[in-house]
Image 1 (cartoon, rainbow, N blue to C red):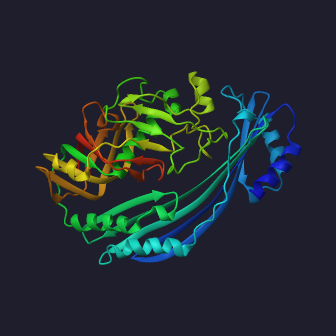
Image 2 (tube, helix red, strand yellow):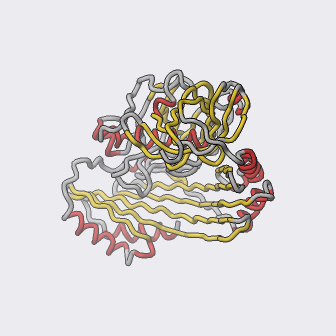
Image 3 (tube, rainbow, N blue to C red):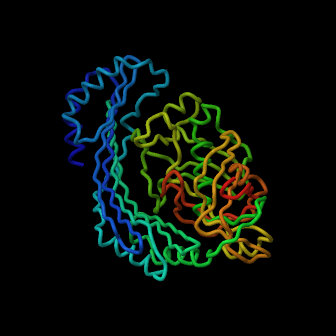
Length: 441
């Protein structure tokens, strides 16, 4: 907070009148404990203060960013931006800066966790399956965000996160589990370890099965992957502008059991309550009972599509990526994991997907692999572990009308290929999922 206050007070002295200027700082202390071969082998901590300076002058815009320790002075940083902006192209998409009335004060003083506290969580994980080899990490973070602009807006917010992610291995199998929360105290690491341990033990000596269309019961990580791909390539308004999004608002594109909400104000939410412009976020219905209700917007995309800003401008990503929701919750259903499995005649339980890549953004066809715990289900019972399979499946169709048989009754923060802590999801039982081959094709 002190570094930010001093920087802004000095910067204000050197900003000319009649230009629009926005200054932002991300200040974070990120701590990480890694373990392998069932022993901790690394403790690291990184403290960063990234400054982003945006200047809009005479219809042109420039954004500079640098670590605060690398900036000679606010004066020289601003002077460079004022020179660079004159050499920039016209900015037809400039949508202005927020007004002072939208200021939000959410800064809090949080202490970062020490290595001993993370080591206790790692120990609990390892001891849950101590006859197997364990590897993974436990991380904690304190993140602060500050925004000031020449309209007089001054906003701030703070958040803390903690994660544990681990894997147990045998000679022929592996099982993984992941949990996240606001603090280490929110994470039952022994429970996480037991889940990974059981998946690894039970999936030893997997057998290959024929590709084809199968019912699937998906763990939270697999569900998170589907939803985050839809978020990035579908509900991202930048994708709509570029003509690659399949989302049609107010259309029943998903099964009625699917409701997705972006809500930064839930007690356990991990993301900031302000967007990158310093504007307070709002609770947003993304999908309601299967009907697509809103895209994720920034100032620029809202202006271009003549729609309302949903305040999803991302920290540090710039305008080229667009935006996604970072406090996403999928509503739970009323089925337990055991009940889902009991309803499957012939299908596959999948703990998680990996190495997923979009083949066609318009249809949301994605290809990827299963890993870290997959099992054949026959007549309502798990009968054997199965090997690696490649799927080629439209993610939007996988959640389509009639394809969602049931939704899990419990939700948790799940990891995804675009980051952890942004999705809180249940398990899903899907009627059909398309597997096109083994690892090689």
